[in-house]
Image (cartoon, rainbow, N blue to C red):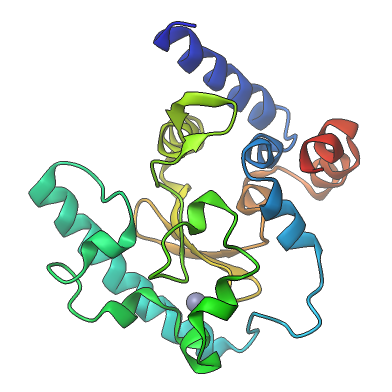
Length: 212
Ligand SMILES: [Zn+2]
């Protein structure tokens, strides 16, 4: 399939799902099935915090990361492949790539166990999900997750997250425009028009199938 045909196919998919208020996340789950599972399971020992103090500490770090990404992009004319590329030149302390709550648990490796199979968590030096990584989409090897996110941004604007922290509930999202907002594990829910749409989206067989 030609490049522009694949792009147009992805765009159609994103438009169709977004316009209908149906689950854009379903498309996400196609190449990210474990994200759904991680979101639905209730861990016996929560790997996340609901404490606002932890959230504030993480937000401060996300702001530092955002500044570093901007600077990296300015100097290199591209985004980093992984957040760990920001150290040491753009972020001096590598621990900045680990959420303060995860640091408190004392074991990044253990915390990452629930997420390690998910492509956006491919950076072993970080606890954050990097949504603009260049991992190929499963079943569509000529396209990367970054390509998909760029197309998603054309439809949904700069609220598309670039970095996410799953060590909190609600999940923290650092958007492409630098704003930080809370969301459910499926951030697209914030962009769905109504609770009815969301309920409907959760009931559709397509959604269920894609999350298996
Ligand atoms: Zn965090």
